[in-house]
Image (cartoon, rainbow, N blue to C red; front, side, top):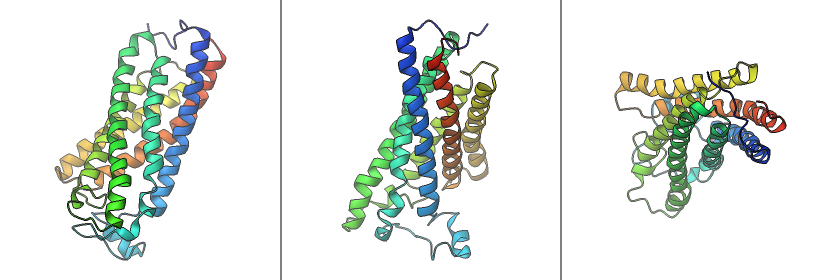
Length: 254
């Protein structure tokens, strides 16, 4: 029989972890919302399959074409969203550790695997976004354009999009595992479980469906789906988890 949140930890540890989890959950919700709003309002799709419709609607004047290096005019405005995106990726690891702390004892290994997937996602995103901020931006502004095409966020077949696909896929796997850590039947935990499950299915199943439809020519198709769905999940579950951790810290019972 599954036991819900363990009561074996000393009260000070429980309170400390619940406090950390509360702030991690709240901050990841804020960072995800900020990343989503900034990305939608300042970084329209300038290449790939999503660009022509935006040109037709008058959102942008034209699409960026290969070699994707004539984009200095978009620095730094179209890179700002990467700051909160980096923050949420790092906070995701902290959140995973705090969730696992309160997981049932017989599901700790599931939580540890989720932490591993979270760490992979965070590492991939942190490296990917830092390269864009610390390498791509100054290189574009200084006209140092050689070999930049492969790393450009505007290249639908580039390294940036591939790493985003990998990172948000790993985050989706962590979502699926998180869902199995919430075993109580109260409304709060059921809501958290369902949202994580839906987000995980979208992120993991979305890649499978996209590959079946388009092969490995993913372009921005899967990246947009996984990015938006993962951020939406973190916005909502971040709020719910902040309540969860606040309750956990106030009582010896879950």
